[in-house]
Image (cartoon, rainbow, N blue to C red; front, top):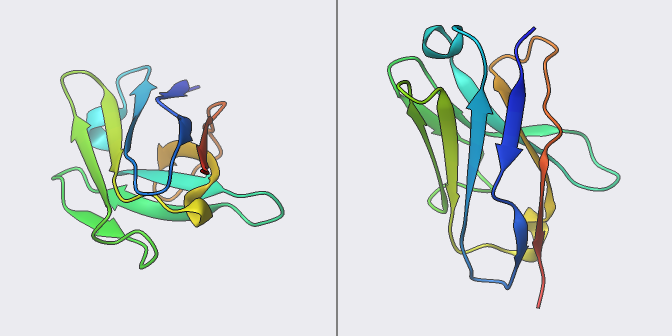
Length: 114
């Protein structure tokens, strides 16, 4: 069973930035596409950014041009750089494979508020 550990969340003012990290255990990392998902209170979990094995990326319209996903296969880690944050970005952020195969970490809370 893969283990996923997300970190880097916190409280930030609108317009601020955060960088999330997700450390993945095991040897599966480089063989899989990965994504960042988020779940806001009362809403469904949604995929906001994805990166293929060859580092092609794709973004939800709501975060395009503000978020950047990247991966480091040598560190088994996937990152999400979030800029120009908005209150509507407030959510718990998770990483997993794309599509998700049932493995989730504990997530990291991102709160955007003044």
